[in-house]
Amino acid sequence: MDSLQFFMPVRLALEAGEPVTEIYNVDQAVDFLLNWPVGRQGPVYQRALNACFAATVGQETTEKARKAFFNFARVGGLLAKDVSILTSGAARSRLRRSRAKLSLQIH
Image 1 (cartoon, rainbow, N blue to C red):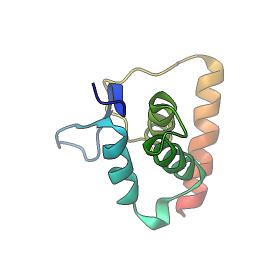
Image 2: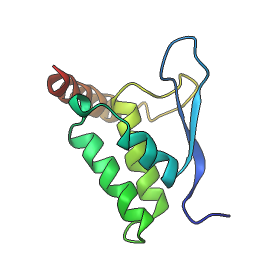
Image 3: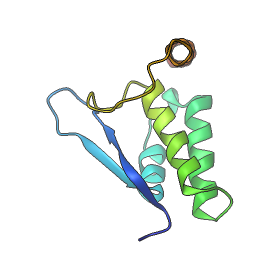
Image 4: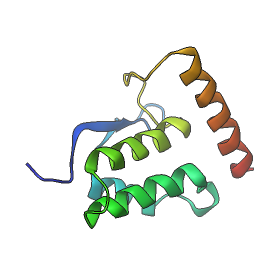
């Protein structure tokens, strides 16, 4: 198994009615992030990009890179609807704050 392979792909729903995009490894995550619009790049994006780049050179674990990329997708509302995430009150509160920050950066 490739050392940069995610234990489970990150499933993205980029456009309604389009097939789900699956990101299977760090290299695919880096490619996706490098193609992300400049005007929509904020701190969550930067953390994901940094973690993924660090994983490619052995400075970060693949799991931490996946988690950072997953968080980027979650905050950005990109996760496919079939992806389960934590639903505790604290997690919902963090999600709302993160989305509000992302929204401020987009506008």
